[in-house]
Length: 410
Image (cartoon, rainbow, N blue to C red; front, side, top):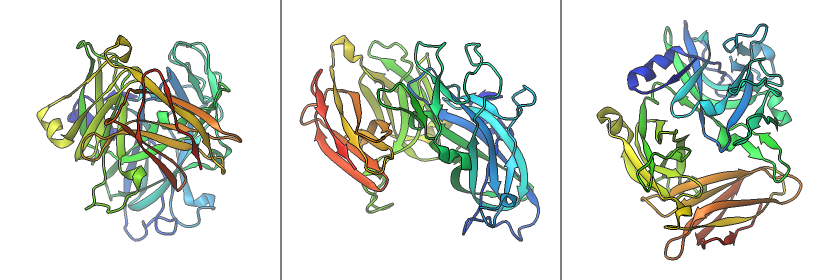
């Protein structure tokens, strides 16, 4: 069951939806001992957008860590997901791209000993649930993508073997006695699904954030328009914040911009970002368009007052503004992925226009990205990281219809 959250009241109702979750504390266990009684844990699934028509992922199960040795199966409790309606399947195949702009999917609910938990693990399935996809075709694979304009072509995603042991989600939360704890799992499709170079293949490397639904009770909503005042769909919209010296005197360049949540504008240009209370920079961007932003948007104040955020993107192909490219080769000795963040010197902390994740194999991987033309004194900062290593390229300019070459070697 899905809900599009159009009000705080509607948002409260989703606390009756659910999923599965797992946890532990301290040295890998939970701190439930001695608290007495039980409470209810509920989880829901949502997603950030990706530049595809569909991303189907099958969730086999989620397990909660009850404490003790993680290697012992007895210390994990399986939380079955809702039935897909096709007996005897209990797993479910989700289209993540249907879960944007505040849409949540109930995933399960269970009763747990009251106390504090710190860990859960999610298992990706190897067989689909037997249902049909959004175009009425049978799933050919458990996990696959459909590229834009190719609704009949299902391209399987390779799932790393490590997910067979479960994807660990480390997020502390407390289950209160006779209370319901509701968490939201934000499965970021844009950062989880990677194109494997020019091979035409895709890799699924799940990136999942865990949010507390009670605290995550605020939102930023608005509309994205083009330069002619027409609603613009398919724009990436994000709520961002920067670290300040009083919070963290030396966060490192990769953390100077923190993207708290991302969504995509629908066909009417509408977007909604679920966020924690606070002040954010709201940024909209779309390839072959410009970007727009609003600094210091107060999520709590806007949610109560009904103020909406309007963002206007110029069509760069109209000739009013132009675009160029940034591209190059990425090499990583250990073979892990690289994240590249493209940032502009706007607002007090700077903003991220877009970021990409480049999966790296045996040799260099090539990337190329469209960006609005930037000439001095206007420039971009490009921050790339892999593991604990970060590289920064400051003052990067982009020229019309030309490629600025930036290679990264980790």
